[in-house]
Length: 267
Image (cartoon, rainbow, N blue to C red; front, side, top):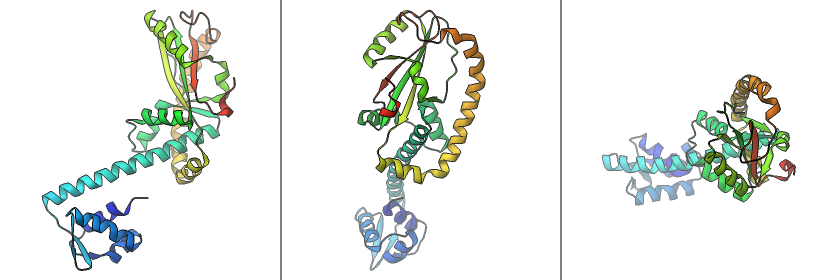
């Protein structure tokens, strides 16, 4: 829900007439005492002027510039909160189906909803450290150039077929793969493991969006299945993990995993 301050400011900017606290409170459906506090704050910044029991917006270039900045800050805060709720809902819904969702697919889904994904990786790493999400990085390594199709989600039951490496070991071999000139395909997959106080509100509030977003992910999954069919038939015998790790003979799949929820930890 949008805070009372930006809503009050928009109401006053949209009219040339002074409005009382009650008139503004009725329009934005907020408690009058709370509205009065935010109006006093706007008045202290000289964005609105008080006249008796009424408030009005003083329209001039300076106030317009100040009002635009205030509204931009609140818009950014609202976008951040909206993104957090969408991320919780999307990853939780995927986990309910026993899927891990590709990071790139999550970013694309958010962008379809008009939400920027800039800085999302940082907040997700923080959530991973807190245990709210599990993180899987998958690498396909080969001597030949890899045209490995990218699945938008990975069934959790499939991770048992990946060669699991500890993060530090993975980084060591990753350096060796690059130094040896091998072709490497890497993707990150996420598993929601949010506590109930985050899970339930997010799932309730984005129910309609989830149906739309799930349809988009299913379209991406269909395109992946079409692309992957030929690849897996051609490379079926070589897609099992192979040794030595630093110089695989054919396309091989490896992964490191961090803070997986108990339901997804098969080791």
